[in-house]
View 1 (cartoon, rainbow, N blue to C red):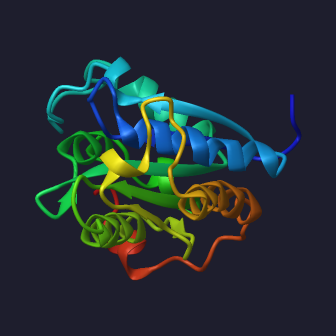
View 2 (tube, rainbow, N blue to C red; view 1 turned 180 degrees about the vertical axis):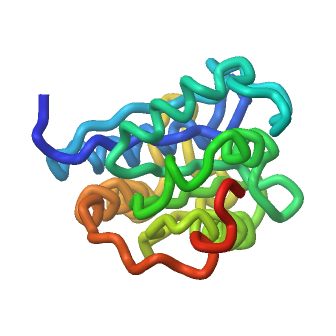
Length: 192
């Protein structure tokens, strides 16, 4: 058991052989190297039908919220689909709100089959900022993932592997950052 921050890494890929999941495992290595504890929240293991705000405690939504609230920091990992993050991540985030993210440190990781998944990272950063999360500046883009991450989870490029581990370290480093004053969004988007 560690006294360091507890980090939850959310995998927004449903693919069995997910490179996003493999990269998040690497980021969690960085968390542990920095004295934190980490767990992977694999969204494949949650029953999360399309979010319906008219239905209370839909399926596993409550369990997801409990796990995220208990975290000191979060790493969101997503494959890039059509220039943005996956619908799996979007749906999971729809179940959450300020209670899960306000003032919380968040790290971002995106994986793409093609070129750099920068827009997916930009979109996630905007969502996290709307939830008053503190997103660390260090983010990780894994382009051409099929050639970058082997089936056993090793990276072909040690520099990229180090960037992923640094993401885990930065999330631990800034997990206890103090909250900022309330923002316009938090005051006017209550319950969003």
